[in-house]
Image (cartoon, helix red, strand yellow):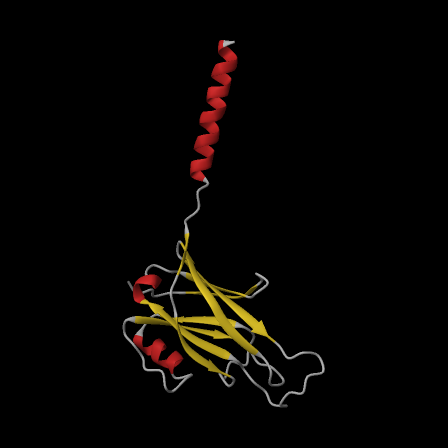
Length: 162
C-alpha cells in the first residue's frame, strides 16, 4: 500500500514539474493607432510586414501616407498585401498581439468577388499603424497572420526601442 502511495506522489510531482516548464509567455493585446491605407504602396512583392524601429525607417514608412507625421514615441508598422492586377483588393489590421519577443499582426485581406467590375490597374494595398515604443521593447520578430490564421509574412525586428 505504501509503495502505491509513493508512486502516486512521485507521478503527481513529475506532472507538476513538467507542467511548469511548459508554460509559455502570456499573449497581450497591443493598442495601435491606424494611420490609414493606400492602394499604391509601391510594394510589388508579395505580402510583407515591416517594423520601423528608428527615426529614419519610421519616416520612410510614414511617407506612404503624406499626412502622417513621424512621431518619436511611436514604432511604425507597415502591412503590405503585395501587387494585385486589379482594384478591389484591401487589407485591414484587426489586432496586434505580443507574446514574448514576437509581435503578431492580425489582418483581414479582402479580394473582389468573382465577376465583380474592378478598375484595371495594378494596385499594392498597404496599411500603416503605430504602437507605443514600450510595446515594442525587446521585440525580435513580427508575424503577419490573415483572417484564417494562415501566416502571410514574417520579419525580423533588429533594433527594438524601449
